[in-house]
Length: 94
Image (cartoon, rainbow, N blue to C red; front, side, top):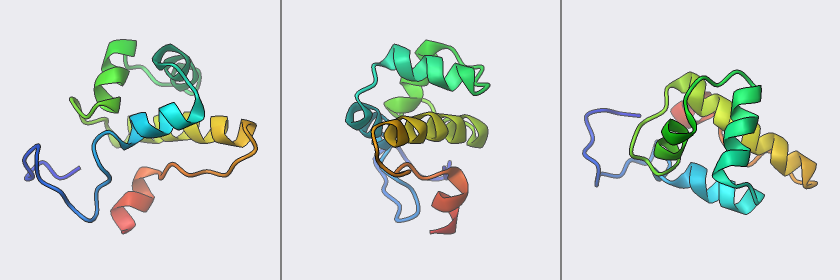
């Protein structure tokens, strides 16, 4: 994310700060379930930090964002869907 933007600024290149939490809710995962999936893929942030990422209080690193996106996308595949959560490279390319 662009650190030059204030918390109320919007950018066409960045998703809304709570988009990851919106996807979490659509996937039917609790915070704890998402954290466990994220941790299984190698995430090292605490469950509290993950919640802060989801609500836009903290900005996840590119690595953490991609692990969260992967965990969510895996859940959507389990539910018979596609991969709706963008990885950081796709967000930067927009």
